[in-house]
Length: 197
Image 1 (cartoon, rainbow, N blue to C red):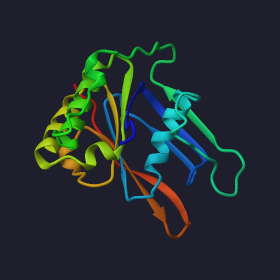
Image 2 (cartoon, one colour):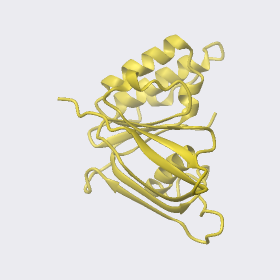
Image 3 (cartoon, one colour):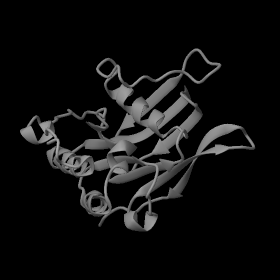
């Protein structure tokens, strides 16, 4: 399994133009929980890769981002929550978890996510790809729901299946979809989210 959890500076907005399958995309993020959902192949992972590639342009060759077919250049624009932030990432053993061969992958993913959230500092965000959530059993998924709903850091979660918006009432939820009429990939705001008081 690839590294599908990344710690980056907290994001305010993302714009894509001619990137991957996206002709154009504009998103604004809450400072807490943000969820991107949609069917397989609907551009969710491109969003993940575009954020990582912009924040760490040369460090992540495993996150390729290419221009939309028919274009020679694409554009990715990311605005951070705090423009002068210094990114600090904890290097404690908790971020270097090693999976015991007898431990279920889902439980390992839960503990890895918990460790990452505990290690974040103010002004940071956690990006979580669908593969992290996809292998969880029902018990571990329920634990992740609690963890995400109580997290104090920004979380951007990509999830393809199992999403019940009622479990994430405070989250901003975006849904990606292929618009048959316009023959292009689009995104709609499914739930605007609430700010915790």
